[in-house]
Image 1 (cartoon, rainbow, N blue to C red):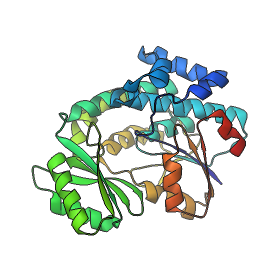
Image 2 (cartoon, one colour):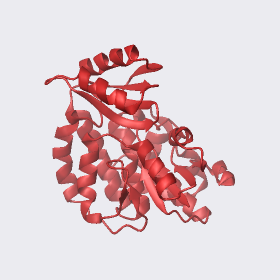
Image 3 (cartoon, helix red, strand yellow):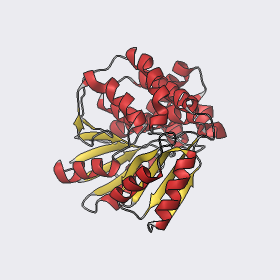
Image 4 (cartoon, rainbow, N blue to C red):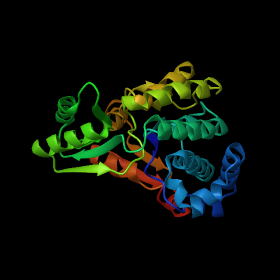
Length: 304
């Protein structure tokens, strides 16, 4: 049984998608749709510009490359995915693949998502850190101990067992990082991010995204999705808007989602669709009982 997974922010790099664009007409069409919808030269942004790393650009760029890869994959290979899932921003790519949102609507929405998350907190106020080598429960408690009424930190991504990203007010994140080191963490890495994603500090972005998502026409699912929010099957188009709002201020339950797919639903094959192979690395640490491939360039087709 096959699941397709789609990467989130952090997977972008200058030159991503060029190989697909050069080799496949269907990929060029996706890039053109994105450029037309956003009045941006998506080709130049992805292939040539360091500005692709800015949140406002990275989010629509990753969605574009992931969707182009998905369209190429299904035109070149006979694939029959039973489920889709996406890491954070990648949920928009998963929704496009599921048939529940048109690509043009999605790329416009994530452009706004990038703008609003960037605007939610003044630069330097928020922070994020990766904590390696501690159990989820230990990190949860450390975040509680490091938080105060006016400076909170909380888990943002449960990426794999022993890898949790925390997010919140910079001072509280730094305090939690020190507590994690004292608790025996193998490593704590303060992340170079533009905003404290998946924390309550994103509340203003939630309010702004409501009007954006109100104008989107959500469609019935052709492929069910496993949601970041609760690591369960999600296939109700009437609840997509609330899901996409909730995920802005809630942690990404990634290893829980992969375990649910693998152990509860019987998925034994994963294909990561989009730039880089960050999720493939995480999945290898989460479960050994499956095959994992990634598709982001023409040469990858031979491995699938």
